[in-house]
Image (cartoon, rainbow, N blue to C red; front, side, top):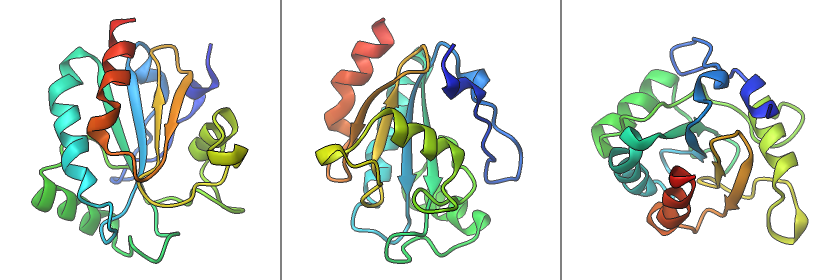
Length: 161
């Protein structure tokens, strides 16, 4: 069984979110920020979520303030921003760090499983995306400039498996 399912990060309300509940689902994990040039990707992420959630897609947003202080708000402020400005209904997790000594275990796992450009594991910026298959394996890693809609074919492929 994939170690992905052993992870249990904290959601934005302070509750554990056991990934064991995601078995059999396709999961898209994204480090998000409210004051970034890529923030409008929330709209594309929500669109994918609405289109595929009933087929087994789960999107998880992990707020992170490590890139240009672009996510300074509290959990409540972040949730409110996402909901009011982009109609986000997919789960937003507790703010975390994705690089450095305090890297969240979810991102330690994801970066170890799928290196980025030039074999680097470091997250380069907000809105990097990791697509996980129904068995908990990291299928692909996408950079910040990759728009959510451009990975729709990969999501469909994994949902059909």
